[in-house]
Structures are given as C-alpha cells and as structure tokens.
Image (cartoon, rainbow, N blue to C red; front, top):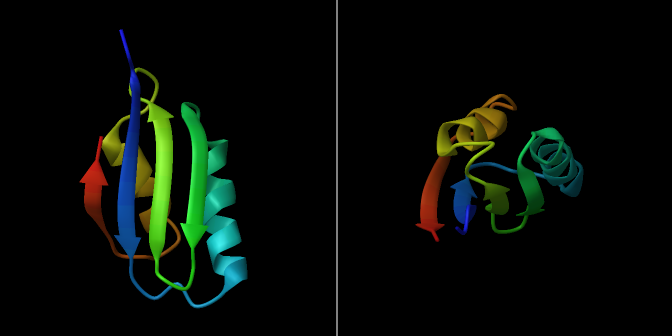
Length: 76
C-alpha cells in the first residue's frame, strides 16, 4: 500500500530566502515529512509525506504557524 502523498501549496508574502529556509526546517521537523522545499520567489511549497503519520491539516498548520496564508494547488 502506498502511503506517500505529495502536496504543492502556494503561500502568500514569502519575502526572502531565510523565510523559505525557516519554513522548510519547520516542515522537515514534522514526523512523517520526507521532503520539503520552498521557493521564496514563487511562494511554491512542495511537501512529500507519509499520510499514515501526518495529514493535510498538519502540513497547513505548520505553514500557518509562521503567519503565512496558504492554499493547495495540487495533491497527488
């Protein structure tokens, strides 16, 4: 059974590479996150995670905890 999911999110107002790095670090600390990348120029966040250990809400919560509004663009 495949339990890996990937989400592509759009965050508003990521203003620097440091902010993107902070967001990546917070996402990567979450149990179940296998990969996280943030492009501050576009605001695109890619997260690959194990859905048995983490759900969509937890990913959104991690990004929102830094004060960013986020919306989902794609989920596979």
